[in-house]
Length: 418
Image 1 (cartoon, rainbow, N blue to C red):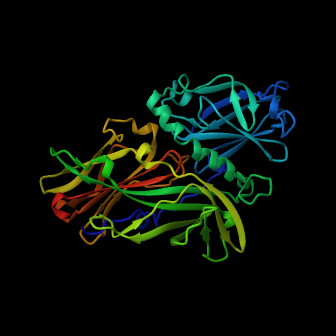
Image 2 (cartoon, helix red, strand yellow):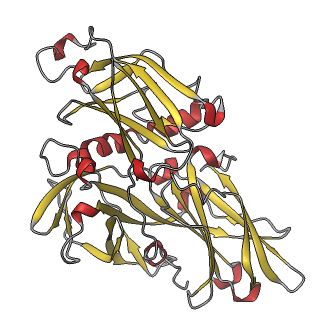
């Protein structure tokens, strides 16, 4: 088989970074709660160590690429978060020291989807208590204000390790202060290239390979706030601690107005029959060290199980009388090939058409756009700004960013071009 276009080539032109509340121009979901001044700890074993929840003076509200800080006044807070994101809440003391993070219904984030009252939903967590570093609400909004079925809840539980890592990464330089307050934050996510089958065409349905045998390539994306932009492009990644790799390379680096972005891979020769020119191995979960400007930062990384969380985006192309592709529709399926509600797991989608020399023919949509912007909301139907001759198209890539910032490039190919 010929090589397929890799996510790294696509991602090279996509630079978006964390934004603070100064960039906020969208309606938000209200999340409020109360911190009693007594009964701070559920676990008596924790009474002798660590801060009390009553020490909390701020709530840090964050998702994979944006954050806001809210003040706790008179033991209550009313924060806001963007609908369609998986949002975590961390509680800080007056010196910005980490106390704990919200855990509701077994989830350490709030998936702000399937909201009972849409954008007008108010999530009242009621009284909060502290168990170790878990902040437990009296009112569990999962299943009430946030209407998810059991399968969807289980999918979000799979993300628990990711948000635990994200919470630990709040202070990557280990100075006791959340890095994002000084615009020195890191965001770490996974890139997946997944080869799935043949696209659909007009009345001919798509053809998927056996989901147990999808081909997958992996990469890691690390973004750093503008306070971390290095003097040069030399960034090294090592790890995981205890069993470090010796094959990590950096294929791409880019800067934006508010950040830098670096991509990392572990490349090995492709085995026979592999649809990509090279095989990119996964990164194991654990603690990694990022070195820039002669300073080390520790990052916790959690690799999401693509076989479990992966949502298959299946395209069908539509042509005009001149046999030119004018639009594409996308159906979203789970790994059991049952339809899923894309909005509950995805917030951005892009369609990319390439030719037989792997050149880009057309691209609709954008990835890693800050969710506050709300300009790329289409998930299902895309119309190309200029018709593309069907005879020129060899691959169709459906790319999306999931609710925690991981990117998926899902490849489809012409049946007779294998």
